[in-house]
Structures are given as structure tokens and as C-alpha cells.
Length: 84
Image (cartoon, rainbow, N blue to C red; front, side, top):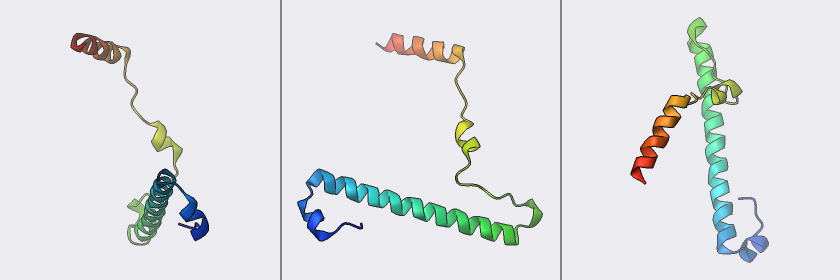
């Protein structure tokens, strides 16, 4: 976790929990990046011209969420009003 023992033993339980959770997220992020790198490398070598490389930091994929229409929002609001 890259924390010296001196500072580790001075931490509260909440701080330790946050440090451990952050460490697990960093491990998961590193694993996902290594997986995408090996996936793209193997696909580029063995996939030929049909293979399309996936970019893990592509902003277009993150922005392509479907926005609800006004009618969908109104129907959801009416449904919620009937529940309460």
C-alpha cells in the first residue's frame, strides 16, 4: 500500500479502511488496463483486418448514454406520485 509502518499505526480505523479500499481499486484498475493491453495486442496480431482495437480511455463510449425523453420522464414521475 506504499505507507510506512509509522504512519500506518497512527491511522484511525476509518482511514485504514479508505486506504485499503483505494489500494483494491488501484489493483483492479491496473488489472483492467493490463487485460485491455493484452486483448488489443493479441487481437491485432491474430485478428487481422477485422479486429478493431478497443480504447480504454475513449470518451465517446462514456458519453453515448441514452437520455430519457420528456414523455418517459413524465410517465416515471406520475408512477412515482401514485406510489407516494
